[in-house]
Amino acid sequence: IFKDERALAKTLAVQIAASLGGRPDIVLGLPTGRTPIRLYHELGMLYAHKQADFSNATTFNVDEFLGIEPTHPGSYRAFMEDHLFSRVNLNPERIHVPNGVAPDPDAECARYEAEIAEAGGIELQLLGIGTNGHIGFNEPARELVARTHRVQLKASTRRSNATLFGGDLDKVPTEALSMGMGTILKARRIVLIATGKSKAKCVERAVNGPITPRMPASFLQLHRDVELMLDEAAAAALNPQQLA
Ligand code: GLP
Image 1 (cartoon, protein in one colour):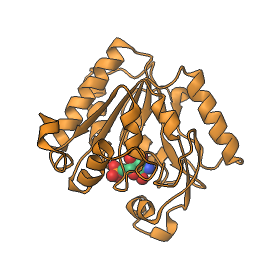
Image 2 (cartoon, helix red, strand yellow):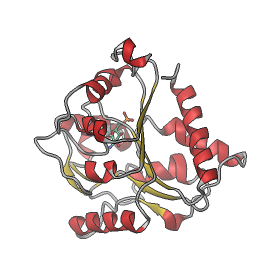
Image 3 (cartoon, protein in one colour):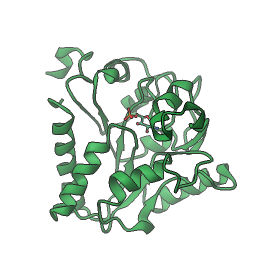
């Protein structure tokens, strides 16, 4: 638990730079959203100061909107270009984001899974969390799909993504492609980051609640190497004894 978002981002950026140092060909899983922005900027700064080298790393983003060109400013691909890819020395050939305009979305999902497998699987998966407990675009549901798949977005998720579309909810796609919880749980190490008081409740349920598809983040309880990095506001609903 960190005092604030800045301290969290700095610490995690240094850890990632160290992982890159120890394993230059690391395979990283990456989220979008407000939460990782500072982290990505910190990584850009470390690269600028020659303290992080991404030249041999591979990345796989967790999700992308369906029907949105990668060049569209609202796409997750564009978000990543803006906040990370343009700031570090990743080889464009080793950057992977699901293609939201692939002619056959199901085939695109299968292709994405195959690419992850071909890269040797994800070593370090970074994650954010939605206020309803979604991970990537794995929305609360009666059942979850294990592998990369096409998803119908919840109204609340579309609302929280509206800023990417100039605040116009009607412009937010209704569907997306997302790694499944099974894809995510296959990563060797997972770090979930959450900041701000709006995340306190879902963080508490993900940690202490039952494992249920109604709270996709609760599935992380099944993973053997998962770490939560929180600011004080996002940790506020956790029992102080748990934090000791
Ligand atoms: C979005 C993304 C997720 C992200 C989450 C939280 O809809 N699909 O990958 O982790 O919601 O976003 P934020 O960090 O902006 O709260």
